[in-house]
Length: 111
Image (tube, rainbow, N blue to C red; front, side):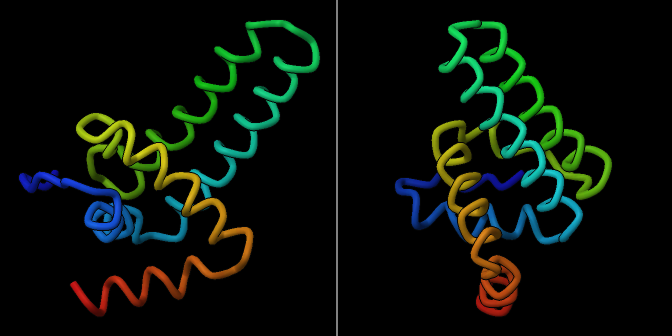
């Protein structure tokens, strides 16, 4: 884990991307985020709060599994929970658009 302190999200983003350099890690995040969003939607539609807990569990479960067993690093969530949450959704958006691989290459070439 980086010893750097990040004062803003844009400075954090390259660190986050480097921590998600493997495609498999990003796929696990994508699956977890998708399942989490489904659970949150179900919680809203049904009023069943257990879906909220399930959404958090499945989202972070997939993400943390990928960090510990695939990427072999410590999730950024532990040190930067807000920036990490925002970056997860930025990565999710870029993956939907098919632009995340190019972003990883761009960041890895700069830093």
